[in-house]
Structure formats: C-alpha cells, structure tokens
Length: 219
Image (cartoon, rainbow, N blue to C red; front, top):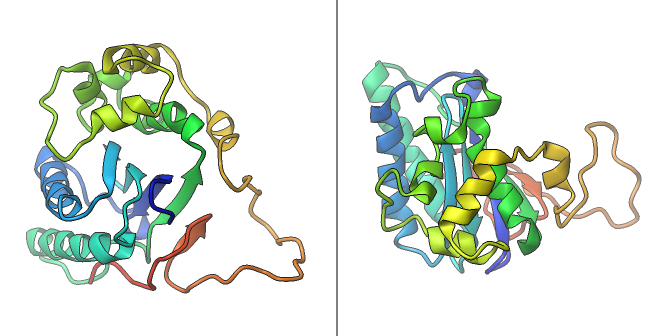
C-alpha cells in the first residue's frame, strides 16, 4: 500500500459464516477498529460490517496494514470464539486489498454503503446501521476515528449531505467501480503469461498493493 492511496479492504469470515449477527458484534468490531486505527495515520472514511464479511474504505498511512489490522482481527477472533464457545479460525487468511484512483472514491463509498441493499436486508442505505451511511447523513453519531470529511474531500461534492443524498438516489454497480481500479480487473481464470510476474507474498490477497507482511488473521 502506498501512503495516501485510496483502498478498499475486504475481510471475509471462514466458510462465509455469520460471525456478526447482532449490534453487539458490530459495535465490538468498530470499537476495536477505532482503537487500532487511532494509533496510525491511516484514515477510514467508510465501512460496512456485514454478517459474513467487512468492507473498509481507507486512505493508507505509513504503518503497514498488517501491523495494525492483524492484531485487531486476532483480538476480535478471540472475543467471537469466547462468545460462541468455539475454537478455530474466524477470518479467511488475509484481506483483499484493491487500490483505486482518488476520482473513484465517491463510487467506492457508494458501493460500500449499498452492501445491505444488495444483500436484500433493506430497501435504502439509510435504513441500515450496518454501514457508515447514516453518519454521513447525520442521523447517527459519527465516531472520532471515522473521517467523513476526508471521504467528502476526495469526491466532487461540497459536503457530506450532498454526497449522502447522491448515494441514496444512485446505485453504483461493480463494473462502474472497477473502472477506477489502478490495476484493471481481470476475470478469474488462467492469467496471461508475463515475462516478469510480480511477486506475491503468501497469506494475502493482493490487488495493486504492497508493503504487507504474510499473516493469518484469527486463531
């Protein structure tokens, strides 16, 4: 990850299991996220805490993602296992990290905030408290670590209300977001031959990212 770059970080739970089933688990994850990101110069401008996975919109700081997200996910995994009386992994290896052009930030926020709508949970982003959308609307209190102003500044909108209103009325499809990837999206399958293929460290699902350490989140 390059400092100052815009990234979409997606962390999935093992076997698509629903480890987040209530507001208690969501608050627990967000509390840990806020504690850890406050120790860095990374900025989180959007989130969606779904039942089986987590979306974060980040501006990367100097501290590598694995250095602060890994211990946070380990703590969350321990807590979930204690609550459920289970032993085993909670997160699938490492997060998927996708780099975007800054001009695509409003589409990234839109995509993240529409997750509950795409899942069929609600009809409108404002109907769900699983994302940061209601904080952009001013309907829910915004935690100090959520940098809404950073998110707005990276878009064409003058304020959060304008951005939130556009998100309410507009649904961005995956292909619209993919157009702003720093590295174009390729369909899964056999990759084309490359003379000098880029190195990929084990344990992370990289998309135009660098600087991570191999890690397995959870227990």
